[in-house]
Image 1 (cartoon, one colour):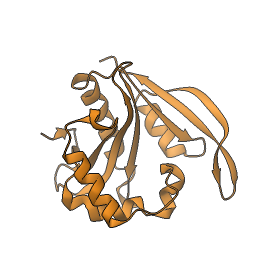
Image 2 (cartoon, helix red, strand yellow):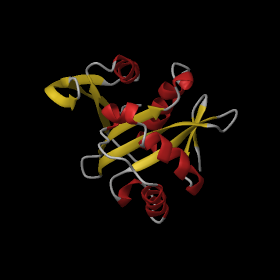
Image 3 (tube, helix red, strand yellow):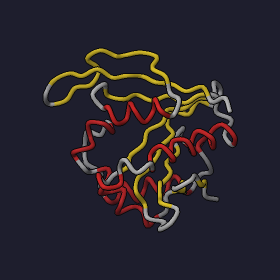
Image 4 (cartoon, helix red, strand yellow):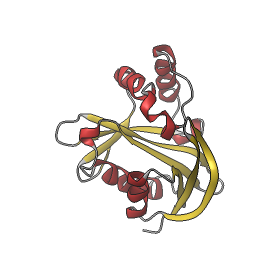
Amino acid sequence: MNIEGRTIRLRAVEPEDADLMYVWENDYDIWSVSGTTEPFSHYQMRRFIERHQDTIGVLCDGQLRLIVETLLSARPVGAIDLFEYDPIHRRAGVGILIYEQSDRSRGYASDALETLCRYTHDTLRVHQLWCNVGADNEASLRLFRSAGFTQIGVKRDWLWRPDGYHDEVMLQKILNF
């Protein structure tokens, strides 16, 4: 089953996505927002996909990765993740990547986030989603705020980058539809 929004479809990761995910995960330019600190191998990408195909749903390790693709062309443009899924308190973290600069600001991220919010509420019965965003990442802050996430705190000097420490904003959304 695919989860469709207005312009995008969220779908499970397939074995054919390993090369694409390898490129995305190893792009040093996005490591500062993804928290990645070391490169991934093709083998690791294939194993990640295999491991998640051998289990059903988000409960396998508290994580669910979905590919974001366009409805019209079925072209993958990014990924959206649930992580640290807590079935007792019914909450999860969320992260999103629209990889190519040319695919950004086209509404894919907002549609994917809105679609994921509805799916997590209606199907997984998640009560709330949360995210952490670098205070200087204005595009992501705008995205999450426009999706109904509210700021609940700021972690001072939380993120280290080569140019020094940066603040991180924590946002959350209570899923009341």
